[in-house]
Image (cartoon, rainbow, N blue to C red; front, side):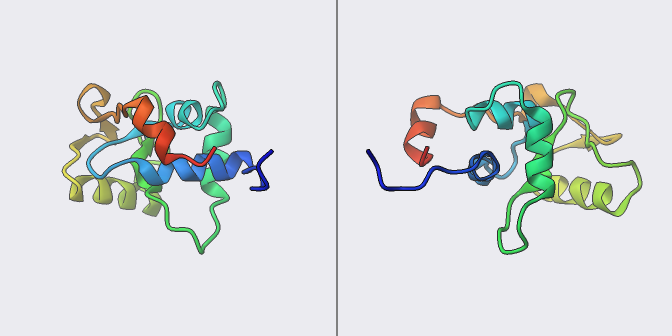
Length: 117
């Protein structure tokens, strides 16, 4: 048995979120799936809201399954997410990202080596 403590579900989501490369996005459901928590898209959203201030995550690279920014249009968070994505070269039109072009599709074997769980 390993003496490394098990990561919480939120920590697993944060770990995967940190791996999303610049210029790519994931959906909440994909983030949860990659963290080994299939069907837990809402948990992924909750985990991102609960991120400690000491942890810097690229939260803005997470959108809903349709590629839409989930924050209310025109809100400061919406504006910030749209700005940050555009700064990384992601085209955002009407608060939506074209998933077929910008969705992160990691090599799962490589991902397994990068994750501690």
